[in-house]
Image 1 (cartoon, rainbow, N blue to C red):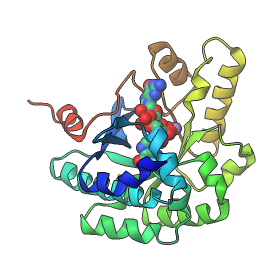
Image 2 (image 1 turned 180 degrees about the vertical axis):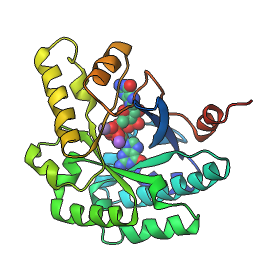
Image 3 (image 1 turned 90 degrees about the vertical axis):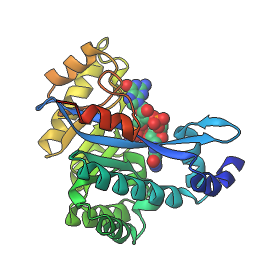
Length: 253
Ligand code: G
Ligand code: G
Ligand code: NA
Ligand code: MN
């Protein structure tokens, strides 16, 4: 737990940074969106995974500090990319404490205004289980975000023990189906059936569908055949630094 006491200093000293993982839009074959993922290179301990420090920051009451930093970084990066002619929607992962805050939407609007970045170039991802922590408050915030034009996705869908019936109440644009469902997609007919039905259900309710963690061509082809809208995973693109994104987006000639 002690590593979270290092977080404020780590932010000041630039030990935290964001990498960006593209999502492939199946219909166009292009990357229209990237997800920002946090990285921490600790001065003594080396790389610490967000899977480790994010839950600690949540528990220790420091997640809003991190999330506000990430939002500021992403919006600042967007201003730079847009000036370079790079147009990608950027998704930021938020936590329960962020999404139940009554000031989140105003904070985001202030940051967008400060960099003259449009709301539509930002989206947020919130896990299904975090959404369920305080569903009413979360939905209130999500409705506000949608009203100003920020995109919203449910992350890790299918792992959060929410009833499928809740899905229709979530005013989101996108459902990201958890990578756990890929494990036996090609070997278990029932697993494939669950994936196909999840995609159909989400699309039928008007949501765009994404599957994350796709590592092989055969899985990718199976998902495309099932009607998936977007694919994210190491097969197409690993998380990259902003510079690597630029090198990929701006091709000479
Ligand atoms: O990038 P990686 O697969 O190592 O991330 C591990 C976990 O940490 C994932 O569940 C991911 O959603 C989460 N995560 C990564 N970056 C952030 C962030 O900026 N904020 C939050 N809340 N979670 C993040
Ligand atoms: O919880 P969330 O969905 O935000 O987590 C995304 C995590 O998944 C990130 O830590 C990212 O590094 C990781 N990831 C992205 N693509 C792949 C992949 O193809 N395979 C695996 N195993 N992990 C991936
Ligand atoms: Na995510
Ligand atoms: Mn996920």
